[in-house]
Length: 227
Image (cartoon, rainbow, N blue to C red; front, side, top):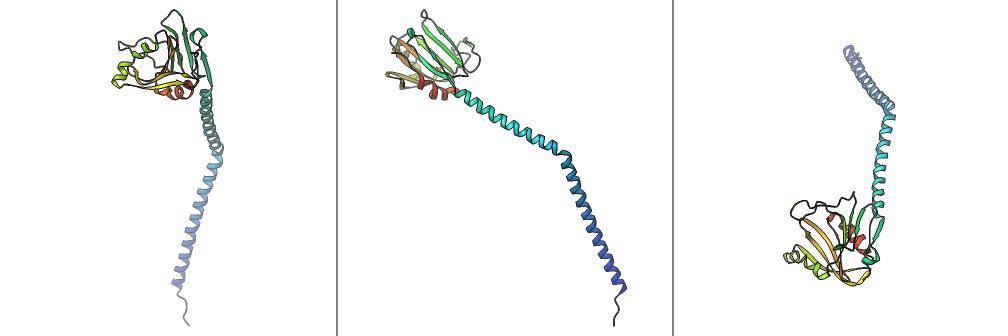
């Protein structure tokens, strides 16, 4: 009967102890990593929760601000001229400011400016005739006749800078006028409607494409007057 090799038995024992040591070191390393992670979690949980809550509050506040701004813009107010000027009326966003001049002794008997910001009546910025401000909405009642007023825009329509289409106010369908779109004023892309009012002329327009949606969806559908 053969005896076990003592040297082989010793080598096996050493290998076993080495593996055991490595496993123990690995377990200790994993345990230390887990412990440090737990300590970090415990030490920073409040900060992390506070940061998450702050982000959530900021997101909610931004959403509420946007919703509030949309609701405010959707609220409308109105302007109506005196009866002597044909009771011209229209709706415009409540957050806009208005500056209106009404004078029977002027060639422009009603001259109204509407703007989201503080209104400063413009002066000419240069000799080109281009105003220094582009208003969200303008309204004028001119003493000039309808045909005379239209003739002022003939050069622009002839050159193709201004597109002309028929227009009727939805609330006054008995009166036919025109709508102008394009470079009505030097350097500005505008939209305007022109309508006869007895021996006078109504002009309503926006001076910036930024306000075209308001012009089409809120202002023109509400436009009214007494022919």
